[in-house]
Length: 413
Image (cartoon, rainbow, N blue to C red; front, side):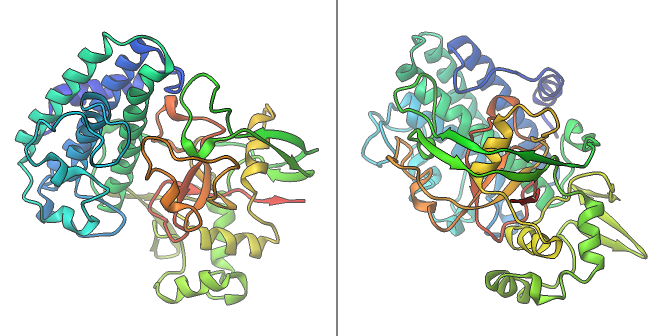
């Protein structure tokens, strides 16, 4: 049964979203945001529990998801580690005190618990684990109420909040992957209808990254500030729509190897697909999977659940290209009223690499292990909390991933 209190709180939060950025939130604002994020987590988790997926043995072992029960425990363990246990880094020896759970580190440290083992750890049941989660949550809020409003003191709270918000988004795309009904607010979401068009940008020099001494929270991969020259370019005002992507599909785009990179062709040979993963043929028309149901494929809506290889192939077919992350950030910060973003994550053509001056922060594994193997995506999705949205935020995924809420826009010189 879905926790009625969490569900009601989730509905309230969705209709009254917090507009401040978590990066600059003060202690009072952080306390509100932490409660919002936890209510969202519990509402999403209870969707899995409603269909028996709170038991890891009932969850398919897939590389792109975690067992929801493990993920719930990991979130509270992470907050306990950096806030209550005062760990200065992710080094296993850096915590000042032990976990409230005897086997907490053995169960929930993502750096030491291999992904495959998370299905067979003998975790407590959902009720017992929620008790631990509530205790951590209450202690975090109590400590935060006595914390000063300076960046160093608030850093672990901002980090834990961002971590939980990101996992909340992962919960949402896990619901999509496992075809589970989402909370009512997500089920009711529909993509906005935006006018298509192209914007010409004159280019110029922008500052990418952030000064480590600047106030507020900054992810380690966003450091350090450095100038980047961006030549003049043209970019789509909005994301490629289902109708536009459907023309590529109808033109045999998935059957023509000439549109695909070598890596894309290798991926395509391992698949049995002629369209994005969420598209389902129904006679002469396409439907799309939306969590636990099929819906008509809205022509105006952005094409989503496409991976990097599919995005590149579409661009080759359209005689366009993906934007660099510098071009995307230039456009997003330009203030141009026609440039729309935030409905879906967007692929760029830029590999995930460190900025000049990079050094890992306390959460050492957040960025460094993924440089070179992942691709930069920019923007946000409809399940990204407003407090997380930033035109400078660097998200990153493996090129073959298409389970997230992600699409593309095209670019040209």
